[in-house]
Image (cartoon, rainbow, N blue to C red; front, side, top):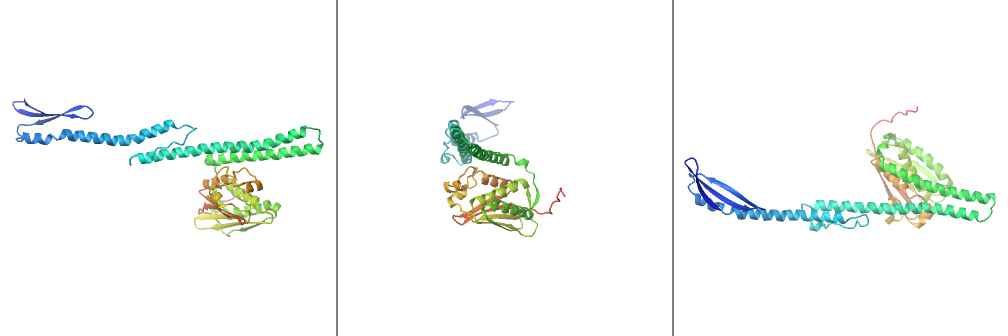
Length: 352
């Protein structure tokens, strides 16, 4: 701190110069007119300013360091992440309160990426296996048929077997394409008011026809009242036919399927209950996962693409609804479709 007295317009001014270090030297200038009597007292009051400025600077550097450290760690982890290693995470406990949200969001994003890569790897392996199996069967049957001369009937059986395996491959491919359309082309939905009371009755008639081959009794309970939902009818029909087909597959000969509709003020619930083999409780949370298989016993009993329930759940969510499931081994399974009910009248049929 330095003091100077200068003459200015026949008067005197007292100048106090303070040099403060804040990442560099800065000079603070105070001008005091001569009518300030207690100059010394003012000077003493100003003397603590440099250490105060220095303390503020040090505290700001510490605070900035605490904020920047986890951000640097996020950058370092991000640079080290590759498609071969998505296991790295930033420790949340090392972050301050200001950056914990950022670190948590970053870790959650990496977890989602890791799950997505795992799903892609698992799906690719599953699809390759599912398509390889029928191709291997077709190749084996053709090679056996060509080893020696065979009669017309034997060649016919080989062709029939190849045709069945071809249909199986087409089923897998069609389900994959359908799942893609449902999940990523939701704008293509044609939503219109649909009366579910009449809709369920039509499904009931279709279910009876589908179940005749196994002599399964199909019953329906539908309230005699109008209940509207905003729906894309073809996709909603596919949802329920998937569930009905699933119930028929897993229900033994001479079993029973009940289709029950409950109409509430703002919700509509339709359940499809069967007397099939049932599903173990530990498998229920993953039942709607893509490509999830629920066990060798069930898979051998009713082979499928493993996508039907995932497609059904995706369609339900597009309609702002959800499918839930409950099951008991040896007693059967109940799938319940929950959809939002809308008010209004039955729309006119354009074909009438």
